[in-house]
Image 1 (cartoon, rainbow, N blue to C red):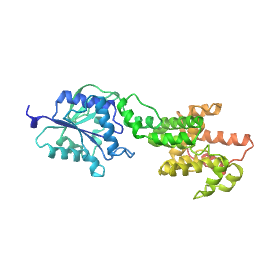
Image 2: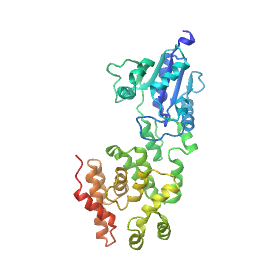
Image 3: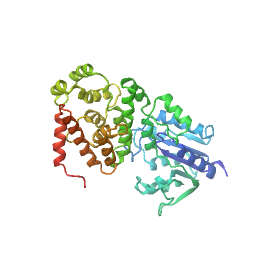
Image 4: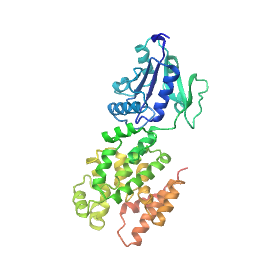
Length: 386
C-alpha cells in the first residue's frame, strides 16, 4: 500500500490522566490498520465534562510516559498533536477531523474510541458531519455493547480494559496509585506534583497524622456519594481533604485569624467567646483559598460549613458535612448508622447528621451554634426530594 493510501487515525480525549485502556486501544489500532499516523489529540476542554483539565504540557508529559510504558514511544507513526490545545477553546470532533483532512488530503481517516463513547455518539455536536469526515474505529470496553444502531463503525479486535479518567483523578486526589495507570505515569505524577499531591504534602504539615487520615476518609466517603448528588468526584475529594486544614492551629491562632476574616463569619463574636474551636471552619476556608489556591466557591462553602451546617447548603457542602461526621474512623454508634443510611437515602442521612450533632452538643452541656439550629429548623420544613 502506498504511503498516501495508508489510513490516518485520530484519537481524541482529555487524557487526564492517560491510562492502560488508552494505550491498549492505540496498540490494537496500530496492529489492525497499520496506519501512516496515529495522532493523540488532547483536548483544550471536553464539552461533556465539567472539570478544568491539567495544562496541555502536563498531559503531553504523561502521554509520553504512557507511550514509553506501552512500548509505543519512538514509533514514527505515533504522534501527539497540540491542535485542540492551541485553539484556546472547546473544539468539537468535526472541527478536529477537518484539520486532519487538510493535513492528510486523500488519506482514509479514522476516529478511535472505546465502546463507552460509541454509545453516546448521537449526542455529539454535528455527529453526521463526523461520519462524513471519518470512519469510527471502536474497541469493546466492559459494560458497553459494541453497537451504535445505524451508525457505521469499524470494530477493533479484542476487549479493552475498563478505566475512566474521572474515577482515576479522584483516586489520585486521595493519594492512591490506581493499577490502571502505568508506573511511568505514576512516577511522572509524583515528580510533577500533579493531582493535588503538592497540596496533600502541605496539608500533612498543617495537621496531625490522625487528622490527615480523617480528612482522607471524609474525602473518600464524599467521592463515593458524589454521584448521588451530581457533584464532580474531583471537587468532592478536594473539599473533603481540606475541610479540617485549620483544625490543629490552636485556639489562640484561630481567634487571631478569625478576627481578621472578611467578611466576618456568622455569629463571629459569640463563636469566639463560647466555642472558639468552631472558628476552624471559616479559618480553614480562608486557608484553603490563600495557601492552597482554591477559589471554587462550592469547595469554600463546604469547608466553611462542615462543622455547623447552615440553611441552604449546596450539595458539596452537604456531602462534606455528612462525611465529616460519618466517615470510617468515626467509632461512635451514630456515625455508623448515618454512614449506612447515606448510601441508601442521602437526604435522610443529612437530617440525621444534623440531629446527631445537635444532640451531642446539648447532651454535653456545650454551646450550640445558631447556624446548626437554623439548619435543623429549615430541615423540618424542607420537602423531601421526590
